[in-house]
Length: 435
Ligand SMILES: *Cc1c(COP(=O)(O)O)cnc(C)c1O
Image (cartoon, rainbow, N blue to C red; front, side, top):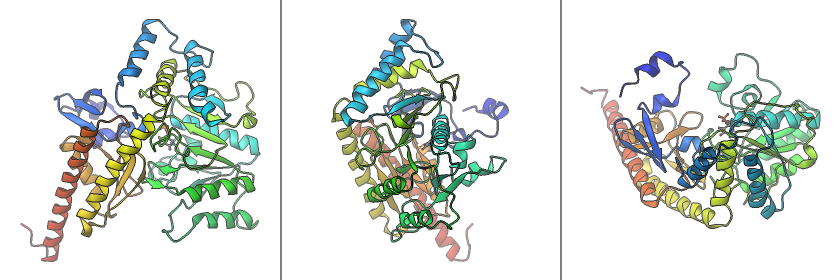
C-alpha cells in the first residue's frame, strides 16, 4: 500500500500508523478494512474509544436522523435540544439509579481537556498546587495532564519542567507483598516527609496505557479513606476504562468508592466522536461563569450518540452481563496460553474487557507478537513502560466467534514469535554459529 503521502507530509510525531502501516478505508463493528480489502479484527478499539464497535448501527441511525433534521452541530456551550437529550438521559440512566448527584462540566473534546479542568478545579477548591498521581499513570499530554503522566517519553517531549505533581507507587509497584498505600499514608502523616500537602489524588482504577495494572479493591478503598482523612479530593480518571470497559459503566461501580471528581471521554460518545466530561460533586462546583472555556465544548453530534448509547446499552443489566461473559472467554483463553508456555514467563492481568498478556521485558516480544498478529489480520497494541504488555481491548459488542478467531490468531502469533526466540537462543548458546 502506498503510504508515501503520509511520509512526505505528516510530521514525524505520527505514531500508530507505524504500528499498522496500511490505509484503512472502512470499518464496521469489530472489523477494519484496508484499501486492499483485507479485513482485520479490531482488538484495539481506538485505545478504548470504540466500546460499541465501529459505525454502530443504532448510533449511526440516530446521528443520520439528527443531521437530516438540520439539528445544531456546533453550539459552544449554549443550550440545544441534543444537549438537553444527553443531560436527561445521563441523569435517568446513570445518576438516578445510583442515587448520585454530580454536576456536569463539558470541556474541550479530548480526554486531556477533561483532566486539565478536573485538576484546575481541585486546585482552586483546596487552594493548594500539589497533586498526587501514580507511577505508570497516564492522563494526557497537555501541560497540566502531562505533569501527572508518568511516562518518560511523553514527559521528555514537554520542553519545560513539569511541576506540582508528586508520584506515589501504584498498587503492586513494589511487588505483591508491599502495601504501597502504607507508604503514601506515612508520607502524609509525617509533616517533614517532604510531600507538599496535595489538593487531590488522580488515579486510574486500571492503568490502560501504563501496562494494564489493576488496582485492588482494598487499595482503592484505602486511598479513598486517606483522601477523606487528609482533605484531598479523589479524582478517578475513567477516560479509558470507564464506559463499560471493566463490565459496569463506571470502572469503580463494583469497588465501593465514590470519587469527588470523575473524568470521562474516549467511549463516552460511543461513536468515536470527540467528547469529554467532568463530573464533580455539586459542592465542589466553585467555577465562576465562563472561567474555563473551549470552542468545542458542544459537540452536539456526540451528545446525540452518547445519549443513544446510554439508552441502548445501559438501561438494564443485560449488557454488563454480556461483557462479564466475554471477559471469562478472554481470560480463560489467555490463562490457557500462559499454561501452554510454562517456560516463557507469561502472566495475565486485567478487568473486564481490558486484559493484558504480560511478556518478559527486554526482548520486545510483545511488539513482535503484535506485528505478527497484524500480518494475520488482528489490530492489537502493546502497553506498559517497556511495551511488555499485549493489550487485548476488543469492542464490548464483539461477536463471540470473531472474538475467538482473534484470540486464535494471537495465540498462533505468540507461538511463532516464541519459537523464533527459542531458536535464536539455541543458536547463541552454540556460540553464535548461525548462517
Ligand atoms: C487517553 C487517556 C487520556 C487522554 O485523552 P486524550 O483524548 O488522548 O487527550 C487521559 N486519561 C486516560 C486514562 C486515558 O486513557
